[in-house]
Image 1 (cartoon, one colour):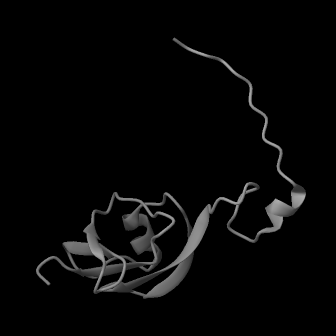
Image 2 (cartoon, one colour):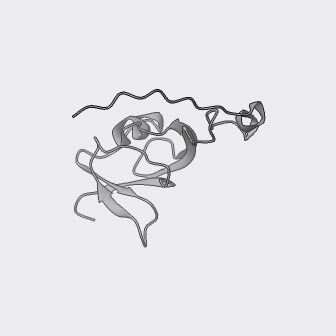
Amino acid sequence: MSIDRDMKITVPATSANIGPGFDSVGVAVSKYLTIAGAVKTPITVKVPIGMTVEDVVNLAGGALIQEPAYIMGGPMTGYVVNGYDTITKTTNAILVLPKTH
């Protein structure tokens, strides 16, 4: 059973002024994160949420090793992700290390 309903969202103009990286309803659409480890140029960049890990690593000049392991987060509490995984609102860093590390 399908129910069609109209919805109207009214957003005060001041909510669009939360700051750069937020859309008109205050949702983060981009964020800063650090790319470090075995990359050509370790950097901190502003990227859109939803960008793939591999694309973000390429912004740092790419991985310097053949089979990299990507760690999302810091060295103590980070977790291994794949190159096709995406940046989320909680991503703060991508570490690139050898898989054998």
